[in-house]
Image (cartoon, rainbow, N blue to C red; front, side, top):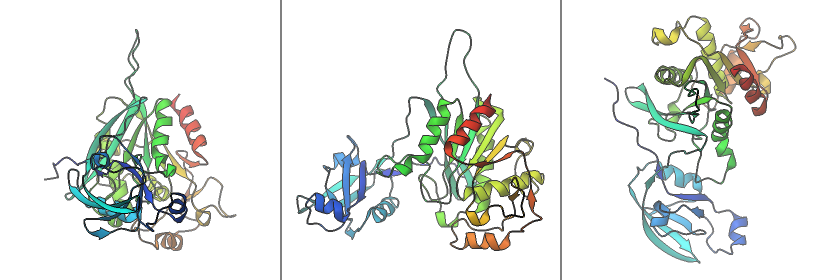
Length: 347
C-alpha cells in the first residue's frame, strides 16, 4: 500500500533574505558582524506579521545562533508551515526578539500558463513534488486548443529547487522558471520533478541516485499522460548538468527494450520524441578518435551526490565500443538553441 497523504508546501518566512556581508554591513553602518539580513518583506506573510522590517538582521532562531543564509534555510526546512519560531534580530544596533509563525510557500502564478501541483510516489516512504504547466487555453469562434507538446525539464545534481525562489536575490535561482515561461509562450506544456529532500519532496537528498531519477521520470510521465492537454506524440526531455548522465543511461535502457525498468506496458511502448543533453564536461566530450555525433553511454550505478562520482564515471567509461549514434539525441549548445530547435520540432 503506497503513501496517500498530500505533500505540504514548504515553510516560508515571507521575506527576501541574504547573508550579511562586510560590504553591506559597512554600507548600512551596522555594528552587528554576522547574520541574515532582510532585504524585502512580503506583505501579509510571516515576516510582515511578525513585525520584521527591511535591514533587520536575524542572529538567532530558537536560541540557535546562525551565521549565514545557508544555515537559516537548513533550519527552516526542518519545520513546517504554521510552526512558530522565536527570532532574535538586530535593528538599529539593538537586539530584539519576536515570534514568527511560518507561512506556506506560495504557488507559482503566471499570466501565460496554468500550473498544477501534484506528487508521485518514489517508494513506500517517499513522495516527490511535481509541477505541471500548460498554456492558458485560447478560445475563439472555431476551436479551443486542448493539446500541447510536453517538455520534461531535469535539474542537475543540486539542492536547488525547481521552483522560483521568491525570497532569493540570486537570479540564477530563476533558471527553471525562465525556461518554463519561454516554453509556454511557444505553446509547450512543461513538467518539473523535485528531487528527494528538496522543496516539498520527502526524503534525504544525499540518498538520491541515478535510479531514483529514472524512476521519477517514469512515474511522473505515467501520471501526466492521463492529462488530456498533452500531445502524446510530442514529448521531449531536456537534461541539464549532471542529469545528462541520467538521460543517456535512460536512453540506453529504452533501446534495450526497457529490460531493467519496471514500468507499465502503456509507458514502455512510448518513448521521448527527442532527448536534449547539455554538453558534458570537457573530459567527457569526444576525443580525436570519436565521431563527432557519437556519445559515450555507459555509466556505472552511482549515487548522484557521491563526491567521487565524476571521477568514477571517467574510470568506468568504455572508451570506444559503447558509443552509438542516435537521431533522437541532441547536444544543447545554448538555451536559445534548444528553444529554437524545440519550436521547429513542434511544427
